[in-house]
Length: 174
Image (tube, rainbow, N blue to C red; front, side, top):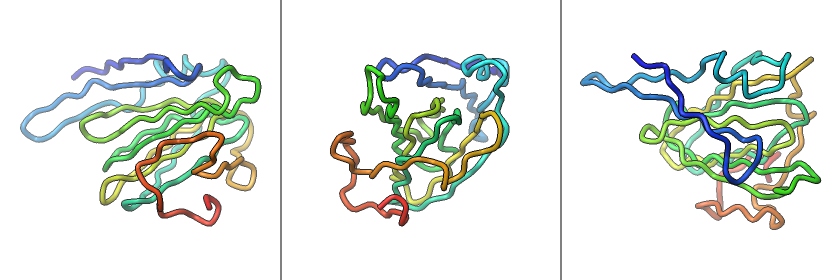
Protein backbone atom coordinates (compact mmCIF):
# COMPACT_ATOMS: atom_id res chain seq x y z
CA UNK A 1 0.00 0.00 0.00
CA UNK A 2 1.27 3.42 -0.95
CA UNK A 3 1.43 6.39 1.40
CA UNK A 4 2.07 8.95 -1.33
CA UNK A 5 0.45 12.36 -1.53
CA UNK A 6 0.26 14.77 -4.42
CA UNK A 7 0.81 18.09 -2.64
CA UNK A 8 0.63 21.41 -4.46
CA UNK A 9 -0.05 25.03 -3.61
CA UNK A 10 -3.23 26.65 -4.87
CA UNK A 11 -2.75 28.55 -8.10
CA UNK A 12 -5.30 31.13 -6.89
CA UNK A 13 -4.51 31.79 -3.22
CA UNK A 14 -0.98 31.75 -1.80
CA UNK A 15 -0.37 29.53 1.26
CA UNK A 16 -3.41 27.29 0.59
CA UNK A 17 -2.29 23.72 -0.09
CA UNK A 18 -4.19 20.88 -1.76
CA UNK A 19 -3.27 17.33 -0.74
CA UNK A 20 -4.45 14.38 -2.81
CA UNK A 21 -3.73 10.96 -1.35
CA UNK A 22 -3.00 7.89 -3.37
CA UNK A 23 -6.04 5.63 -3.19
CA UNK A 24 -5.77 1.86 -3.29
CA UNK A 25 -8.88 0.02 -4.48
CA UNK A 26 -9.83 -3.61 -4.63
CA UNK A 27 -13.04 -5.65 -4.58
CA UNK A 28 -13.69 -4.62 -0.94
CA UNK A 29 -13.57 -0.87 -1.57
CA UNK A 30 -10.69 1.53 -1.07
CA UNK A 31 -8.15 2.75 1.48
CA UNK A 32 -6.11 5.93 1.66
CA UNK A 33 -3.95 7.83 4.11
CA UNK A 34 -5.34 11.17 5.27
CA UNK A 35 -2.35 12.47 7.24
CA UNK A 36 1.39 11.92 7.33
CA UNK A 37 2.97 14.12 10.00
CA UNK A 38 6.32 14.55 8.22
CA UNK A 39 4.69 15.48 4.89
CA UNK A 40 1.98 17.81 6.15
CA UNK A 41 3.67 19.58 9.05
CA UNK A 42 6.49 20.81 6.79
CA UNK A 43 3.83 23.04 5.18
CA UNK A 44 3.10 24.95 8.41
CA UNK A 45 5.43 27.23 10.43
CA UNK A 46 8.15 25.67 12.58
CA UNK A 47 7.22 24.86 16.18
CA UNK A 48 3.57 24.27 15.26
CA UNK A 49 1.97 20.86 15.15
CA UNK A 50 -1.51 19.42 14.81
CA UNK A 51 -3.16 19.26 18.24
CA UNK A 52 -6.68 18.02 17.76
CA UNK A 53 -9.28 16.75 15.33
CA UNK A 54 -12.95 17.61 14.97
CA UNK A 55 -15.75 16.03 12.95
CA UNK A 56 -18.98 17.62 11.80
CA UNK A 57 -21.97 15.71 10.45
CA UNK A 58 -24.39 17.64 8.25
CA UNK A 59 -27.36 16.93 6.05
CA UNK A 60 -28.08 18.00 2.48
CA UNK A 61 -28.31 21.72 1.79
CA UNK A 62 -26.40 22.73 4.96
CA UNK A 63 -23.89 25.54 4.46
CA UNK A 64 -21.33 26.12 7.22
CA UNK A 65 -19.10 29.21 7.36
CA UNK A 66 -17.46 31.54 6.41
CA UNK A 67 -15.38 31.24 9.62
CA UNK A 68 -11.76 31.58 10.62
CA UNK A 69 -9.35 32.92 13.20
CA UNK A 70 -5.94 34.55 13.46
CA UNK A 71 -3.82 31.54 14.45
CA UNK A 72 -5.23 28.15 13.43
CA UNK A 73 -4.05 26.07 10.50
CA UNK A 74 -6.83 23.74 9.38
CA UNK A 75 -6.42 20.57 7.34
CA UNK A 76 -9.97 19.84 6.15
CA UNK A 77 -11.65 17.12 4.13
CA UNK A 78 -14.92 15.30 3.64
CA UNK A 79 -14.69 11.67 4.82
CA UNK A 80 -18.23 10.73 3.81
CA UNK A 81 -20.64 12.28 1.32
CA UNK A 82 -20.04 15.21 -1.01
CA UNK A 83 -19.25 18.83 -0.25
CA UNK A 84 -18.22 22.02 -1.97
CA UNK A 85 -15.27 23.29 0.12
CA UNK A 86 -14.58 27.03 -0.12
CA UNK A 87 -11.55 28.98 1.09
CA UNK A 88 -11.60 32.80 1.18
CA UNK A 89 -8.50 34.97 1.56
CA UNK A 90 -9.37 37.39 4.38
CA UNK A 91 -5.83 38.65 4.95
CA UNK A 92 -6.07 42.42 4.53
CA UNK A 93 -3.17 43.60 2.41
CA UNK A 94 -2.89 40.30 0.55
CA UNK A 95 -2.86 40.50 -3.25
CA UNK A 96 -5.73 37.98 -3.24
CA UNK A 97 -7.78 39.62 -0.46
CA UNK A 98 -11.47 38.59 -0.72
CA UNK A 99 -10.71 36.07 -3.49
CA UNK A 100 -12.07 32.55 -3.04
CA UNK A 101 -11.46 29.08 -4.35
CA UNK A 102 -13.75 26.06 -4.26
CA UNK A 103 -13.03 22.33 -4.25
CA UNK A 104 -15.50 19.49 -4.79
CA UNK A 105 -14.65 16.74 -2.33
CA UNK A 106 -16.30 13.31 -2.48
CA UNK A 107 -15.38 9.63 -2.77
CA UNK A 108 -14.32 10.14 -6.40
CA UNK A 109 -12.24 13.22 -5.65
CA UNK A 110 -10.53 12.60 -2.32
CA UNK A 111 -8.47 15.55 -1.25
CA UNK A 112 -7.67 17.66 1.76
CA UNK A 113 -7.15 21.41 1.85
CA UNK A 114 -4.67 23.07 4.21
CA UNK A 115 -6.02 26.48 5.21
CA UNK A 116 -3.74 28.99 6.97
CA UNK A 117 -4.80 31.51 9.62
CA UNK A 118 -6.79 34.58 8.54
CA UNK A 119 -8.52 32.59 5.81
CA UNK A 120 -12.23 31.92 5.75
CA UNK A 121 -13.40 28.32 5.74
CA UNK A 122 -16.84 27.29 4.48
CA UNK A 123 -18.54 24.31 2.92
CA UNK A 124 -21.85 23.28 1.39
CA UNK A 125 -23.25 19.73 1.63
CA UNK A 126 -24.60 18.47 -1.71
CA UNK A 127 -25.16 14.80 -0.75
CA UNK A 128 -27.89 13.47 1.57
CA UNK A 129 -25.38 13.49 4.46
CA UNK A 130 -21.71 14.34 4.84
CA UNK A 131 -19.04 14.01 7.50
CA UNK A 132 -16.42 16.78 7.53
CA UNK A 133 -13.05 16.43 9.24
CA UNK A 134 -10.89 19.26 10.65
CA UNK A 135 -7.31 18.69 11.84
CA UNK A 136 -6.09 21.78 13.71
CA UNK A 137 -2.62 23.19 14.42
CA UNK A 138 -2.11 26.32 16.55
CA UNK A 139 -0.04 27.71 19.38
CA UNK A 140 -1.55 28.22 22.82
CA UNK A 141 -5.21 27.52 23.37
CA UNK A 142 -7.80 26.83 20.71
CA UNK A 143 -9.89 29.79 19.59
CA UNK A 144 -13.49 28.56 19.60
CA UNK A 145 -16.52 30.22 18.00
CA UNK A 146 -16.61 33.29 20.26
CA UNK A 147 -13.01 34.15 19.29
CA UNK A 148 -13.39 33.49 15.57
CA UNK A 149 -14.44 35.83 12.80
CA UNK A 150 -17.45 35.21 10.59
CA UNK A 151 -18.48 36.60 7.24
CA UNK A 152 -21.93 36.18 5.72
CA UNK A 153 -22.06 33.15 3.39
CA UNK A 154 -23.38 35.40 0.59
CA UNK A 155 -21.25 38.51 1.27
CA UNK A 156 -21.42 40.50 -1.99
CA UNK A 157 -17.81 41.70 -1.65
CA UNK A 158 -16.66 38.07 -1.87
CA UNK A 159 -19.25 36.85 -4.39
CA UNK A 160 -18.99 33.09 -3.88
CA UNK A 161 -20.85 31.14 -6.56
CA UNK A 162 -22.74 28.78 -4.25
CA UNK A 163 -24.89 26.06 -5.87
CA UNK A 164 -27.85 27.09 -3.67
CA UNK A 165 -29.81 30.24 -2.92
CA UNK A 166 -31.54 29.12 0.31
CA UNK A 167 -29.20 26.88 2.31
CA UNK A 168 -29.79 25.59 5.82
CA UNK A 169 -27.81 27.97 8.08
CA UNK A 170 -26.99 28.29 11.75
CA UNK A 171 -27.94 31.49 13.57
CA UNK A 172 -24.25 32.48 13.45
CA UNK A 173 -24.10 32.04 9.66
CA UNK A 174 -27.21 34.10 8.94
